[in-house]
Image: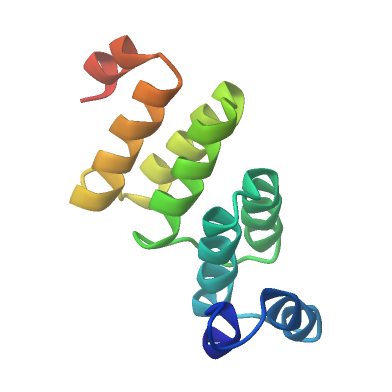
Length: 120
């Protein structure tokens, strides 16, 4: 799948077909798909995939959140941003450097910089 994600080497549509046939995708596979959706500007797909893997009991990591938060900021989904921020806190990653910077970027993109003073 990683090979297929690189547009110069494979094809994203092929990777999506592979993904659909994986019965229990790992966090690594979900992260590959989320990253690919962000790179293609399919931000609603990022949110949908994030919700899907949480429903399947897969827990995000500090690699997942920056891409998800980027997607949320790009489409201006304040409610989704708050939900994901709560999930960041629940998973204990709010002080991870990459995740914290991504939260800051998301809130700045959403025009909610004052929220940062409350959380940080």
